[in-house]
Each structure stands twice: as C-alpha cells, then as structure tokens.
Image (cartoon, rainbow, N blue to C red):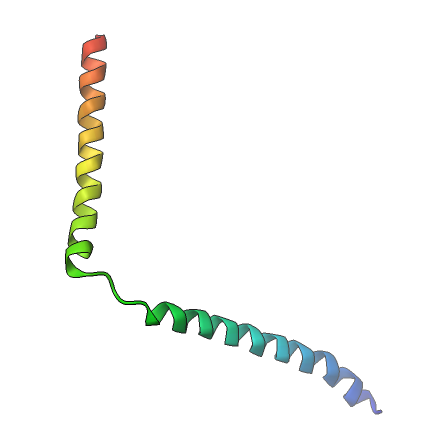
Length: 69
C-alpha cells in the first residue's frame, strides 16, 4: 500500500456515506411527491377556518374581560 491508498480509504467511506444519505433524502422526497395534493376546498377552507377560530377566540376573550371590568 502506498501513502496515497491509505488516504483514499477515509475519503471513499465519507463519499459512500454521503451518497447513502442522498439516496435516503431522495426516497423521502419521492414518497412525499407521491401523496395527492390537497383538494381545492381544503386548500381554500383551511386558512379561512383558522382565521375564523382565531377571531372567535379573540371575541370570546374580549367579552370575558369586558364582564370582569
């Protein structure tokens, strides 16, 4: 073994680990991409429902504090 061969081994194993990590990430992205997108109704109604719930909570809190005063 020459000096060059000894230094190539850690680099090779590091590159192999990086390649395996990339393969896992690609598999995760592929799985996520295979899921169906949200329906139009859900994509539209979800932000509306969150806003309505927040508004209702603020209104109830205001009424509660108004009664305490």
